[in-house]
Image (tube, rainbow, N blue to C red):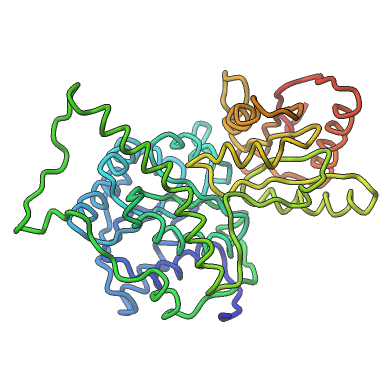
Length: 393
């Protein structure tokens, strides 16, 4: 339905931004997302977009500029990774609290220290409760598709929340893949014209942004933000349904791979899902009922749907490419375990922390996890609830 190309994840995202043609893009370069803005700046210089590109002096300033531009009534996008997202920390909450539909493309990268430029999801997990919708991508195609859909989700009048779209740094951001670009006009027709909501530059209807909000109204405003996040779930599904009509590619809150009738299953984000799928294909050929649940939407967290999808499985491993340090486990695990707490057919669950700082996840690692799950399903006993893997002993 479009043009077949070979692109890195970063270039795919930059092309999605070109097709979206935002009013303002403010950014500061940081590996491994630098290539997104580098490529997009070429589109700006060549006149392929009308975007005002703001090269900020830091990521904090970049998000501040995005907030100002969005409040003024512009369609706004940016990109970052790792410490860059961490430096935006203060401003992430302000963007969400002011209900500004900014879209941020993120090449997921480990947080320092030690300094590491490779991919894990510790940056996104650190921002999971900032009020931003979070989408994750297995490959370049999904990153491209998710960025386009993110615009529609963020700008929906029932939502009006910022959205961050993640993909694994280097593994996806810098790897060339075969994928499809939609026609420019098809994308622009899909996203439509941006309709600002109470913009600051509407001088006939003056507004105040960022006022002091103490005990009288703060909790009510946070409740409104919470309700908007709840309303985002059906909007995400509706946007995905409409996107399938123009692309032929179907998206949901998560992907179920051979999950129907599975006895053992893995939950994992982003590119690692591809490795797990390869092992599942092999195990299915040997009669092992193995499956995968790959989250696409982490915020809002689709607890009811996850419980329904996993409640018939005997044993589940939630694999985290981020660490909760002294928590019970990695950050994904307690969310999924909580979702299944009241399930009538609650699976036994374990957590594996893997691949930090870009450490490879091999096929044998995944086979070992499934072997452990099969043993748990047979004996009903868990030896270790949460532990590291892909680490030197």
